[in-house]
Image 1 (cartoon, protein in one colour):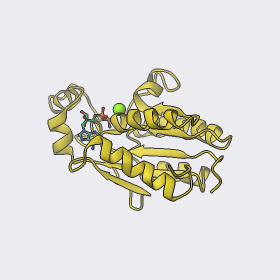
Image 2 (image 1 turned 180 degrees about the horizontal axis):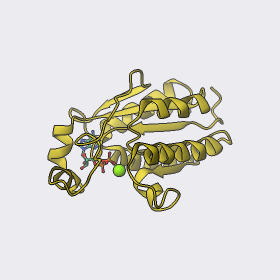
Image 3 (image 1 turned 135 degrees about the vertical axis):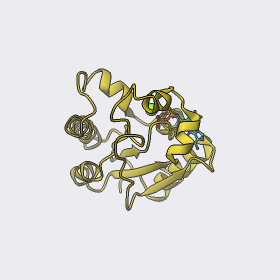
Image 4 (image 1 turned 60 degrees about the vertical axis):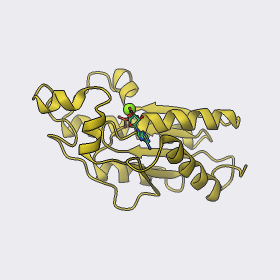
Length: 180
Ligand SMILES: Nc1ncnc2c1ncn2[C@@H]1O[C@H](COP(=O)(O)OP(=O)(O)O)[C@@H](O)[C@H]1O
Ligand SMILES: [Mg+2]
């Protein structure tokens, strides 16, 4: 893979698994290397590109297809992209993979529902358990684990810094980033 080619780091994982935290660390590192970069964070996309969409399967799929569409436009023009949305459905993630064949890096940000619920960064699990949020991934809505992701970061056993390092090491080893 040429060093000038874009790539898409496609994070998938439960709410609270660590997608945004690791993204922020990678942003700091990649920008520090002088790389171009664009981030499509699920929460931000839902306030803009996907404003008005809900959490039915259909709306979730539409949301993820939009993210994939934009990630494809950017990455095919040499701009590295990080997407950080739950993206719970395997089939739609695989669609994104096919679209971005060869520059798609799926990263499973792994943490159990129990641990994410303990972290409850945004208080959403408590609301979901109380029935205040319907269709909450991992509680009352499905999450389909990746079967063959390029990278699994074990966030119950790693620090965010270790997870970020693991991803950067992969990108260097695969030639997506120049070695430092
Ligand atoms: N290895 C790790 N990687 C990422 N986050 C971690 C890790 N270990 C613990 N955490 C904690 O888990 C939480 C993840 O929250 P966040 O990044 O907002 O999740 P998401 O964006 O997936 O919903 C943070 O409080 C973070 O400090
Ligand atoms: Mg997040």
